[in-house]
Length: 174
Image 1: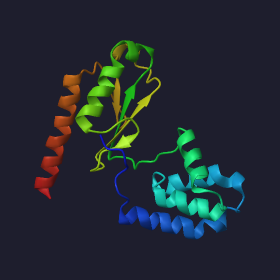
Image 2: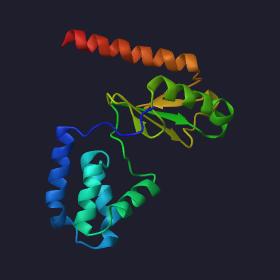
Image 3: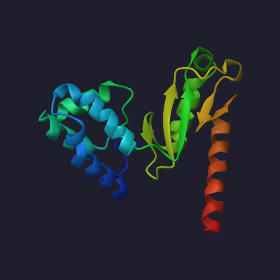
């Protein structure tokens, strides 16, 4: 499994540079602005790449590790870019009892990533949710906004095969 986020793209680096060059017009250099600055950076960039966190630390004149500590403490912040498709495995009581951890392990193995990571090709990102509210369909996975119920490791394979076929069709038509 990969430990580091995929490399920042030129487009993302442009967003980081634009955000950092305009940061002082929106925020004062008070440490109490750290969370609002991080939230705004993530809204504009899609996640918080290393380069953005370093720039924010420099702007606020605080140690880099203080920014990283806040980003890793709060669940709202992403260290990895969002994938083209977001996969969320339900870990509510019914899903957990019905095999949610087995399903999560299947997604992790098939995608080669861990929870809160993005595949190197940026096709998928993976995370858990506390409850989807579809307990009768447990275990549940939500892909983008579509709820998939009664998931098994074999269904994980089938779902991914469907995406591979779609990607192949798209590349052949372009």
